[in-house]
Amino acid sequence: MSVTEARLLELKRILSHYVKNHKREALNAARDLLDELEGAKAITAMGCREECAPCAWGRPGAAAWQNPCRLWSLRESLSDLDPRAPAGPAVRRQAAELLEALEKSLLPT
Image (tube, rainbow, N blue to C red; front, side, top):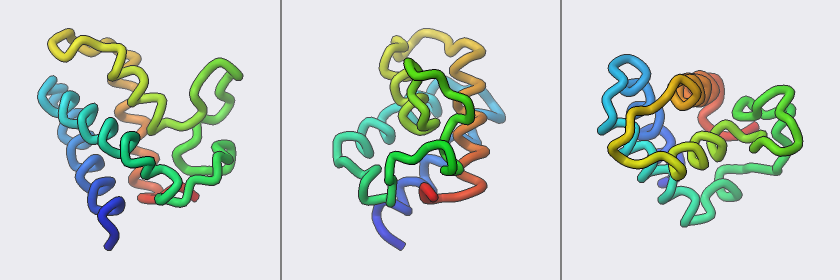
């Protein structure tokens, strides 16, 4: 298992905890992990070909102004959110959708 896959398994575990309990600490941990993955340019190492439409992580029907990748969409939402602010329904939905996508395919397809 690669380091990236291990980090994605950790993200899946964190999101699973957040989706069940809505604990802000889990959301902050997810944000930190997503920032780490972004900083390491890990999405290319994961196999991303920037073809979100057929990818398990892609957001079907995403508008041109939206981020079509569920992973980066959640990261953008979390980076805009104060670490102490309550997460709104949109962030909770994005976390649940990313968790579902990660359960379907741990790596982008």
